[in-house]
Length: 85
Image 1 (cartoon, rainbow, N blue to C red):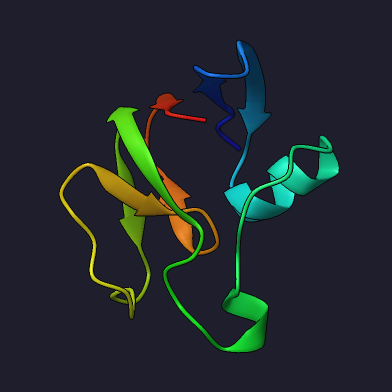
Image 2 (cartoon, helix red, strand yellow; image 1 turned 90 degrees about the vertical axis):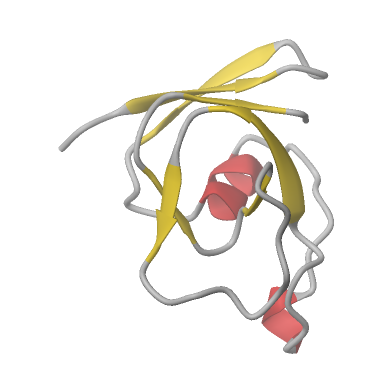
């Protein structure tokens, strides 16, 4: 199982991520609050700017994303990331 580094620029913090859970769940486990409404049926609230790295999606996201945005709730990390968080 591959473990990736996820750097949170604004918080000056680095997390380990292994895709066994979502990035959103990983943030929650580290007591890092972030907006989301996915669990209420609305897509797009967990949108975050990706400064560097690569993610993929098992299914196309329901929300419209710019090329530098990801959805924390459903992306699969493919490389070390730098996020604007």
